[in-house]
Length: 469
Ligand code: ARG
Image (cartoon, rainbow, N blue to C red):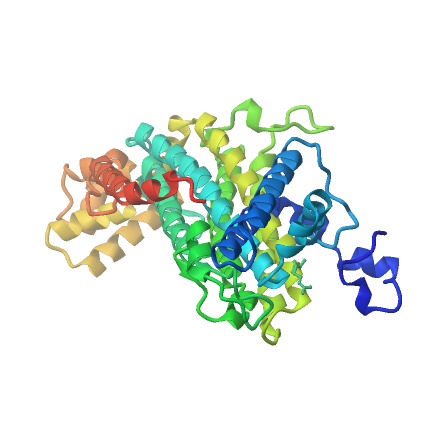
């Protein structure tokens, strides 16, 4: 165990167990790039403000860049004994450049440093997640475009309700993902204030230039209050909340995929590359990927709950509890990236079983509302029509037939308004193609929905296309 930076204050060495318990390097080492970029901006500012010399700043920058490339190249390993990534980089720098390295931590604290590193790290990951989500969204749009006329039952209470199309169903998920993208953009935009320069909690007596470092690091402005700057983790919670909502959407889609590829539905077939077998039942083809996505949603919600609970009782400003933010949010980020990058190819490669979807519409009276609407269009009040069709459905259930199989004679017994044209009106295809209302399942309505979606997506795609710093 190496000697701690703060050892002078103490008369006894810390217990080995405290050393291990306290250390965060095993997980915060992933922020080394942000830590180094933040330090370079800080050193430049210190020199610009004549707080350190230009030569020292240059040495610091060179030393830090060398450390970055050595870590990247696998030439420098993280010291598990270093308390955290901030201490590690600083100690390594001082080992390499001596005195100048010891000047880097002027007018700065690990408290503003860690808030900065995490914000920069999450800002970048928000973009990465958004780009993966755009791919998933595009896979759903492609499936929609290929299935504008693929009729399937729409469900409420998981009971066949009214006919829709597979395009309509896929577009519903595309809409959810578009909303998610808007929320990711919003979360990224809320990461626009730079904590650096808040120092430990109370700012500093040095003449620092916080706007300069903020701009260097791609922020709009510095955080307005130094106490808030070091103790705010809203941006972590907000991202975890958005990720939780995305996982909810992914999990609902996963659940439907699981249902659809069961023998009970057989609406889709997963590509063999995205299914798994059983160790005992030779016939099995299991949707493990979809099940894992559904399962992992709980994990991401867990991170959000952990973060909210961790923060709710903390007095201002920094408290060590906050070190717990990283594992929670890193796990949420890793999990969602894994889910998105596996789901997209699974969606793109699955095949749609059009015959089975259509066959499912033939049972379950999904055209019952259309029969009632037929009578309404001939002048009957909706409630009366509803009752007549209800009676007819009851009779059909007894006879084991569909509404379209009842002879006109039988229908006329219930209402004189029934005529030969009723059969065209309750034909499943007609039922779908006539549902042209805005947002409805008719192929033209879905196409209009898709082009409106495309327009709404353009600015979001542009925003995330620029790899934000
Ligand atoms: N490893 C710490 C964290 O993740 C860094 C900040 C530590 N600051 C302190 N005063 N102990 O929160």
